[in-house]
Length: 111
Image (cartoon, rainbow, N blue to C red; front, side, top):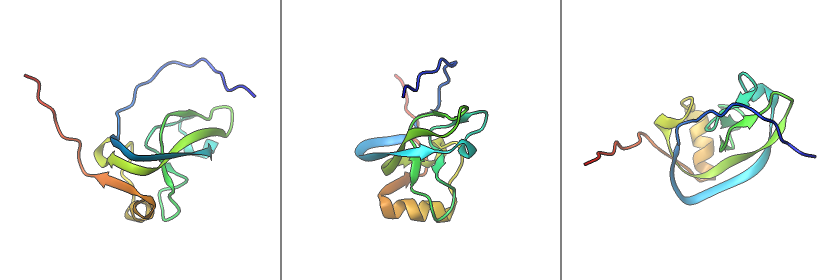
């Protein structure tokens, strides 16, 4: 089964703080997770509560139904770069799996 569909490109802020310790797993991303048919990178999977398993790693088009997608289950992320701030219950659940939340992305200066 092919998953090829032409869509307009959209860029999202990078929430990944480091690739060290990064672990992703393929999960079925449900239609209900998306707004306007797209699940944004950094969305909490499967829900923003104690059942949280990780963050959607790349945008997933669910406009035609549930689709497989990559879910980050461990690694370091910038919390302020996520599309929505995770609840304390979700953060606790993801911390147990190996997710580390860094409060803010440092500003870089160009010389």
